[in-house]
Length: 519
Image (cartoon, rainbow, N blue to C red; front, side, top):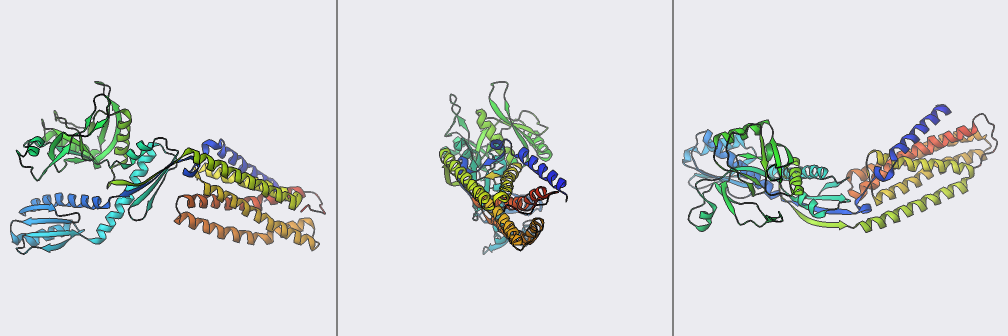
């Protein structure tokens, strides 16, 4: 490649770097250790995920047995892991077992009572373990969607152990709101209100609570402050929902023209819209309870058939509450409840101190390196210093381009990379010195110095790059930040230490006869 082509490439790279990095305060995100924020460890209740699977299986088994015209006395969840089926006639036992084996491969027969009229089915260990793992993985994706909607820049969300999730939210200003957003399970379901019993009569002992009825609290709000109050009002609804939030396609905050209060408008996908239309058609003049996380938000009377799959959730929301509810509904419900196992807030003052210390250390180290190289290698050292400045600029440009997060370990990675970039120039310059001592001409010494040092430079940088990739793959938070800046710096140093410095030497030697080199 000719000198002109080399300089064109260098200028293009330099122009891109300046464009990518400016303004630096807006282009590079700072990590939790540099700007403060929240560090949260969440624990996923995987038992609830398994229990939910068993609940769904029990409800579906009833429908399957009815469709097969097999009489049963009961189908119920025995515990977190088992479903019990009671038979009217023992002769139907094998048919029931065959039906469940065919439709529910994750269940296996555990026991059979003496009169062969009650069968216990349990979950297979492999399926149980897989669903526990899936519950954690799905929770991570749901949390990531919620936090992205919430507007936190560069959050860290990753698995820890078998059932914990680490969440880091740099620069967060409202920790309480974030915890409420993250921890809400957001299980949305629609239940018909039971017309034959009332919660008051059941609680007073005047009526027995049917097995298919649940008593759920009704959301109460303070009429003055609008805040949610502990609910004492209960409502009797059918346990099995007629529709769930799994069909939800969109949720949006709207304002009611009647009272100017915000509410959440929801829209179902085509399948959900069809189901919702059938539900409203078949249950005119009945109350339909809208339930979120086990609490009834409203229970309007179905006045007409509702087509189009649109409904609303009201409940004396503030605008912020309605907006957060819309976020969690759009992002999807968590497959299992999560609890906060650890919650730490990193103060902004600690972040400022860390930034000042890191920047001071970096600038001091950089100046000392530049001075040493310039003094020790004279004019050739200035060549290396130019490459070093360009190397730092390229590292920051790539971080800005890919919106990477800069952390304290990341700053350490940058400084280590600059030291390794100097090391490459030291290898080249010492080889050039060696060739000059043998009596070679300046231009031959430079050519031989670069060619002989090249293999050693590539080997050292390649092995370091492999180590950085391993650190990134298996490391967490700060380790990943260190690995990212180290990897970028290693690649940049190959370009600056070999290509840029040699181009400067070539330009200096172009159409000149140089007998002595300041090195």
